[in-house]
Image 1 (cartoon, rainbow, N blue to C red):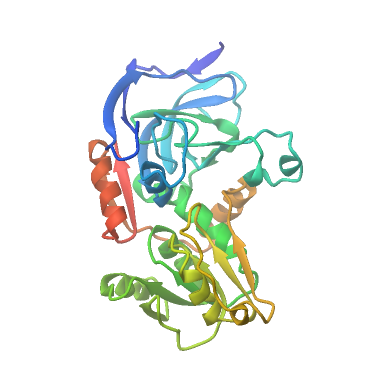
Image 2 (cartoon, rainbow, N blue to C red):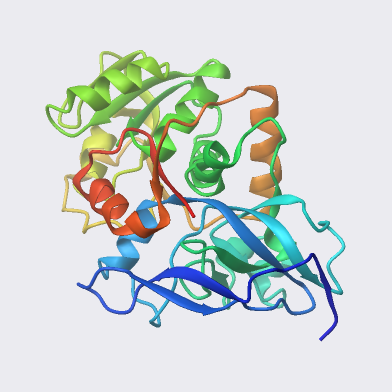
Length: 338
């Protein structure tokens, strides 16, 4: 194996490993992995804690265990394979959820690698960033804008990217409802309002803290998820993993409008009267992201800057961060700092 490397002074790394549903993540120590030809080795500087990580540890989506979660990774390149030309040793990069795609299937050939038949996902099928070091395929990483620091950049790698893809599915909608106002919604709300959109935020019933936060992020209205906003919506994005929100969103969307389901997992959608769908309303889902999404997103936030609101945790408190996310007591996004 040919390797280009910095002075790697450590031979072991720490990681929070997930080994079985119902058990907390455990701190483990293991050898630092070395990158293959197209890979980079990163010293992790920050890693966001995403709702998808919660779905993994709660067993909502099944994968092969053990695994190190974490797919909102900001890291410094300390070694790289000899076929990596995009990034230099010492450069800061971001690692997203999509770890690689096959490049052969019909989806990949049509620039839809987010639908690849044989993908790998960071922190799900390959070890992720709840660690001091991690490996990533350089072709699927992004350069981090220099004006955004490590901890504020981390949530952009999934909450921002997936939220941006969901937002793009709303087309030319100007009045948009956000169901669930957490990591993704607070980022996209800033971008959407900067583009002239009028955003209504829907939260858990009685969650005054989240509603106040939504208004601070530019939303013109905020209320409980069982309410109708004071204006008809052109589109709605459902960030919360609650299937019962789909009929509620359809009831708030005008004829010809779109409801976008932005999560990787959602509870079952209950039956609802056809009248809610009639009028050429649409329901769409978001699956992963493409590299083009990432390039477009980072270009967009260079023109309309966004500020991520975060709460940081040391790496060994990953379980606490996940529990806070589960209970809905994180305002904005949680970030682990090794």
